[in-house]
Image (cartoon, rainbow, N blue to C red; front, side, top):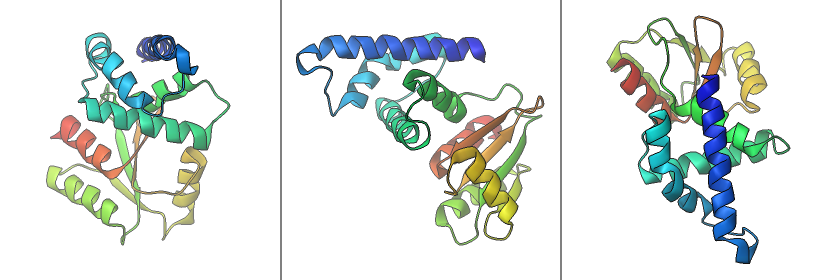
Length: 180
């Protein structure tokens, strides 16, 4: 995964430099930068990493990465943060049958119920971790993600690496693509 991560970081830096060159007259100012980035990099993500995105998906991914970066680690390297975000949310699992899955949720959340329905429909073994009933689960979620927003799917690989996948639609899409 490290080689792919380094490649994504390099592609994001290449895209950033190309964007800066294209918008040199405005010193890089472009409120629609995610659209420009998606146009520039979408095909390259597919060719280099097998990460297929519709333009709107890539724009959404870039915007989410930007929001997460600003909220969780604004002083960190943006290309590295974005690459980690993209891998965490969109990379295929290397060992899906061996991964342990846990869904952080609470019962009255409609987005959580949508994910639970997808889990039930696919017949997947997922540990449900209700953050309202068990403070330990809420604390784990905050420690990992910086907030207690649910649903979040925790994917633990056989070697103990955790991926934290937020957003109900992204979780459902991941589960359907991986286990459907």
